Length: 97
Image 1 (tube, rainbow, N blue to C red):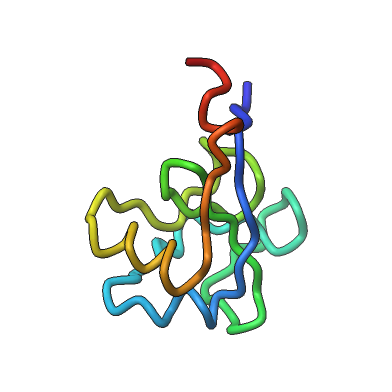
Image 2 (cartoon, rainbow, N blue to C red):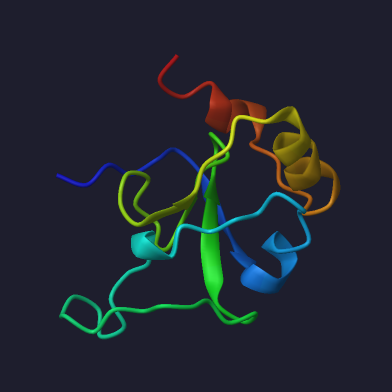
């Protein structure tokens, strides 16, 4: 069963690409037709990917499916907060603790 995270926000690929270490795993992309065999092999600048509370990027809102980028690097976390304005509200972060 797919796992929904507590918080995610959508960002344009063009914005995510501003991070020098952003190397998307294209094998993690959802199929072009929403579930069939047509594989996507590239990301357009105007595609939207989802950044989750643990700084994982997915192609869709499910936390554990279609993972495109994962990093625990402090530079990535700083980029997300400083450049993208990404922040998990304290009340959201406290859920489940």
